[in-house]
Amino acid sequence: MNRQLARLAAAAACVTMLLTTQAPGYSTRDFADGVNFNSNASPSVQESQINDYRQMRDQLDVKVDSGNVRVLRTDQKALLNDFVTELVEVKNVNPRELRGLARTICRKEGGDADVLYDKVAKKNYIVVVCPNFQLPYVRKTLQALDQEWIKEVNDGSWILYYKGKNRDVRNVMDILQFYRTPDWVSDFDDPNNAVVILDQPCIAPLINRGFKEVDIPPSVVTLETEIYEVDTQNDLGVGFDFESWKNGPGRALWELIWWDYDGNDVETIFPGSVPMDGEDWGRFRSYDVTVTTAYLDFLQSRGKARLVNRAFMAVKSGMTADLAAVDEIASLEIRSALPGANPGATPSSISGDSIYQLSELYKRYYEDGKVFPSLPSLLAQQDTGAATAADVINALMAFLEDVIHVSAEASVQLRNELSGKAADGYISYGDCRSTRVPAPAILNTFRDRTLQYLESGQVGILLSVLPVVGLETANLSLALDISEVAGLTPSNQPIIEHRYVASSFDIADGQPLILGGITRTATVTSRNGIPFLSDLPMWAGGFLFGRDLTTRRAKEIIVKVTPRFKVHAMDGGDIPEPIATAKMIVEGKKDLKIPQTAFGFDQWLLDDLAR
Image (cartoon, rainbow, N blue to C red; front, side, top):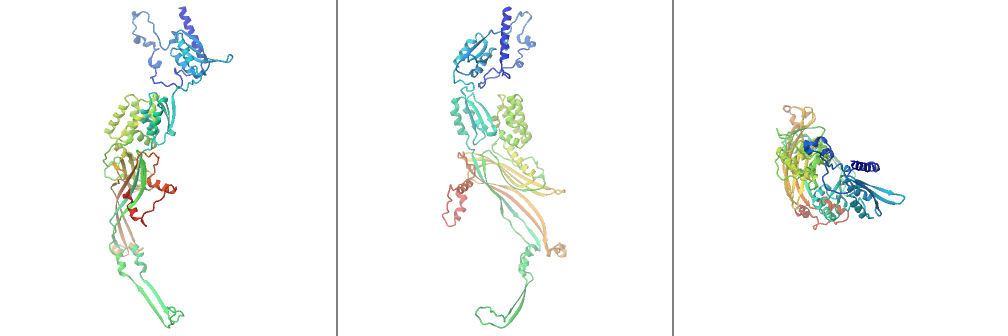
């Protein structure tokens, strides 16, 4: 008994010494700083209930006749081990470089280690407290590592800070998971689109090669877009067109000319002729009846196509671009162009594969302030224990169902896909990137962008495109919205008529795409004529001095899109080719070719065919 008490007293003294010598804020981790390891954390005392004596009977199944039972507690080795102390001198390396390793080894058996500087003898030591059986191994380890080049923070790992050049570095890292080792550790610097990588030095050539192959400029498609408005006029005018007549033959009506010539004048008509005596006078008045009658007849006119907007849109693969021709209005009310239609529904059936990633879709709505928190913050809650993978999936599904309004069938499909990716109990950013949202939901996002124009008091034409470019063809999701003022409410607020169509197409390089079928009709009734007289009733001859004009305009919107692919533009040029050519000419890097003919009309007219 006395021997056991002595042993306990010695252990208590050792623990007291360690507690009194350790620095404030000392970490209780059992591994050194900067050491990479891949292992699951041991359960805490609270989780394991190792010191809950109330559970002892159930854990050990102790019976009345079991007699004395001795229990070995792995978290109380200080009560069982025979501890010794020793000063291990280090002659070459700074002892703090070995302190972390010494602590890691000693703490496995309940001991500890720290640094001791002998300023009098000018010697450095590492004080170790460990069981007697462990001391020889600790001593030999520290002596073997007593080298000048030893640095605790330099454990042989390779560190790289890489800043993305052409793509989102998170997307690049998702692909580079095949270029790494199991010891891979990384962290993102999102404001700078950069990442810090910690891995083995042998993997450096492979990762550098991966960045070179993956971080390339995205494929670009230049869309030469032309929006035409074709007017189908049906104008009928009855009565006297005073406005046109006033500026036409009416200018010469009742024209009166007085003229005379006196033969006694000194000068003659023809130079060098003999002067003649005499005089003459005359009076002239005219009225052109045949010309004026054209403005009393029925009038009819026809319209032609009008170019509303033309632009070159350079769009990166997977990105959205808009082309708008809109007008500002003061206030508005929105109603559907189709009677009885659901304003939140897309009135068109589409086909084609989905091209929107869940991560990009969530990011778009987060930037618009419609969802919170950001996707990286939501996923990071799994690391802190604030949320499980199931909680993250529920949050993502709430976003898809409540904000994007995916169908019930798509909701089930997406939930099953996310649950399958979370089989290991974790949802990563790469899992969200690889999850594709069905195409109908993508077109709903186009419609949300359109409504933002309407809510801001703008009406007109809005074209939204989203291409995914391949080597030879591309998939293009296109949405066309037409909005116009259709009338006024009793409170004199404009009523906006809204037409919307969206679909997906497979397009080829240089092959034009024509989209039409959306029409809008405007009816305008006006009256013009001679002031006061045109206000007379028709039976009183008012049609002789003015007319009522009813104008009906049926306009069809035609969109022509000509794609030009630029796949893997390694030179980083994302601007359209015509603009790039003009820029080179201005900078003097390229000469303007002179047409072969004098005027060059044949070349300019056939320029589109040559391309």
